[in-house]
Amino acid sequence: MKVLVINGSPRGEAGNTYHITNAFLKGMSMIREDDVEVVNLIDRNIGFCRGCFHCWNNEEGVCIQHDDMDELRPKFQAADIVIWSTPVHTFGMSALMKNFLDRLLPLHLGTMEERDDGGDEHICRYNKGVKKHVLIASCGFYSYVNNVEALEKHFEIMHKGRLETIICCEGALFRIHHSDVVRRANQYLTVVRRAGKEYAYSGQIADTTKEQLRHRFYNRTEYHILANHHWTVPREGMTDEEYKLRKLTDVIHCMGALMNRDRFTKEPGVAEFDVTDLDFKAQIRLTVEKLEIVTDPQSFLPCHIRIEVSSERLIELDRYVRSGQSHSIHGSKAGFHGTQAIVNRMLWAIQNGQCATIRL
Ligand SMILES: Cc1cc2nc3c(=O)[nH]c(=O)nc-3n(C[C@H](O)[C@H](O)[C@H](O)COP(=O)(O)O)c2cc1C
Image (cartoon, rainbow, N blue to C red; front, side):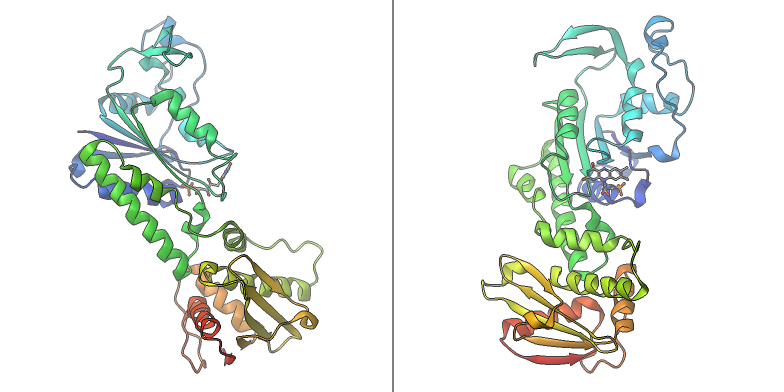
C-alpha cells in the first residue's frame, strides 16, 4: 500500500495544514513508514503547464517540459492512496497544488467522454479508478459557507466515491500559543489521528469521527478576536498614546475570548482591568450570549475581579504568550504564569461570585 502526500502549502511542513496531515499520517501507523512519501511542492521545480498539448498530439503521454514532474508523475501513478494537503487560498486550493494537478495532463487521454454525473472527462491513460484520495485542507476563516465549497466540489468532481475530506476552519489557531488554544487544537488533532487510523483499516472515516472533525474550537466572535489579535494592529493616523491603548484593549479583549462563554449564564461575569500607569480602565463582560469590552468607566458594572497591572507588564505578558514561551509574572503574589493563568483566575472569581483584586 503506497501512500503519496502532496503538500501544496507554501509553508511546507511548517504550515497549519501539515499539522493536520501529519496527525492523519500518525493515525495510519499500520502502514509502513517506507511506504509513505511526502512531496512538498514548494521545494520542487515545477513549471506551469504551457497548454501546448504536446502530451496529446506530439509525444503521447510525454510532457514537453522536463522538470521535477518527470519524477513525480510516476510516483503519483504508483500510489494507492493520494493525500492532497492544501491550505485554502482565495476560496480554492493553493496555486502550487493546482499547478501540480494541471501538470498531470499527460496521464490523461486527449479524447473525451461523458461522465455518469452529466459532466465530461478525459479518461486516464493508465490505471483508471484504482486510487483512493484524501483531501486535507485548512483555512483561516471561521466559516465553511461561502469559503470552501469550490474546493470541495473540485475534488468531488475529480474523485467522487473514492474520496474522504477533512477541512479545518479556524486554521489561524495553529499559530497561536495560548495554552487554551493549544489544548483545543491538540484535541482536534487527536480526532484527526483517529480518522487516519480508521482510514488505514477500513478505507473510510467513520461518520461519528467526521462529525467531530467539523467541530468548532471557539464561537465566531472569540475566534475573530483571537485571530485578529495575532496580526499587527495598523497604526495609521494614531498617536503613540492611542496606539498603546488600542494594543492594551486588544490584549484584554483576547483574555475575554479565552474565557469559554459556554460556562456562563445570562448574568454577566465582569472582570475589570486597571492599568495603573495610565488613566485607563476596561471591563470585560461575559454572558453565555456575548462578550463585550467596555472602556467608559461611567458604564461600568460592579465587578467580580479587578486586575491591577502596568501597561508594560500587560504588553510584555502578551508578547511572551504570542511567542509560545512561558513567562512567569515576577512580583505576582499568586505566582501566575501567562495570560491563561490570569484567565483561569478570572473564571474562578466570576464563577464563585467573588470580588477579588489581584496585582500583577
Ligand atoms: C494567499 C492566501 C489566500 C487565502 N485565502 C483564504 C480564503 O479564501 N479562505 C480562508 O478561509 N482562508 C484563506 N487563507 C488563509 C489560509 O487558508 C490559512 O491560513 C491556512 O491555515 C494556511 O495553511 P498553511 O499554513 O498550511 O499554508 C489564505 C491565505 C493566503 C496566504
